[in-house]
Image 1 (spheres, rainbow, N blue to C red):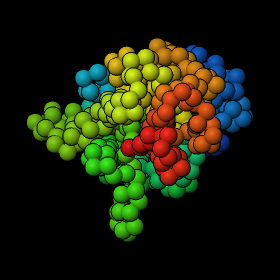
Image 2 (cartoon, rainbow, N blue to C red):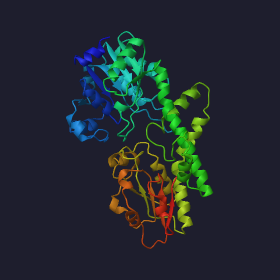
Image 3 (tube, rainbow, N blue to C red):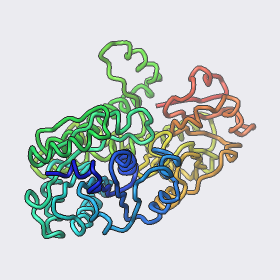
Image 4 (cartoon, rainbow, N blue to C red):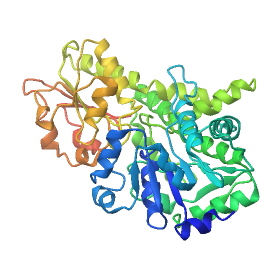
Length: 438
């Protein structure tokens, strides 16, 4: 198999199928070493990249302007590549079952354009068996080629953390797997071109798939435990942050915090594992319990805020309430699968239409997905309550004077829900504030 050598000698190209938060940084990283075709069927996104604009904020506009990636929405350009990486999203449906349509669609496109001698690596999060049992047959059907004879398959789970400038593709150990030893060796050598932290060679594709899906399931369960503790301690009148700070002095106490669990990994991956378990006749106990707690946190926040307003003897219906932050995590423009929408929708049930402010979010995406229009920061005035939902750096810079100015002057009490505990609790422990956090 000469794919690795052909890439280095630029006799063949590497392709990225799917140029979102995961695929685009990978394409840019490989383009520093080999020729890369960056394919996405979203023409508007490709136009942004071609014009030097990074809509994800993952690498920045300067990097996009200077990269040699051949950005395209023309699938036939994939025929120029011999090493293909598929990095499309794998969401869940409304009933929390896996939605494999993106990865199946990518497999079809790839099958229609793959050439003999190619290696295909999937990075999309899936349950064990998807790569070999679902993706490979699609590629074979569309191409007329045979896996193991005309092309070879592997799996290398993505570990990119959107918005994280420390844990990057280059600095995180990369799990790689292949259908046989020769394929595994080729895939490992290719990824070693960009991953400074090195690669871990998994024993099989299914092992690599399983490793990915449990990484985020583990985090989900731990955050669910913190959220449950937050609910319990709130009823006891104890501040959860102070409890965790005290418990954290023990050397082996795991540092997790309560919060909203959205996005495309932690809030989704557990459902892929439990779906496969159900197929095999096992009903998950711990994993689904954690999911139920985390899925319900938006409703819990809204209810807690309403109770706080009532405690402050303030009317709930038509109250002026602001939600600061709408993305699924801090310092990231992505609003897909954000749990802040659950707070918003629950408040609507109480007759409140919240003012939503998020200077970091993709406003067009939020409008398209949720029908929400963001307000500017200067709209934060004459408020009855403020929910600080996402810990953006831009919000952390707000002074107490800034926060004071957001509230209506006639209100005796200022209701502030600082979900992530961004501010110093002691600073807001005065008689004119009702402050709480998860």
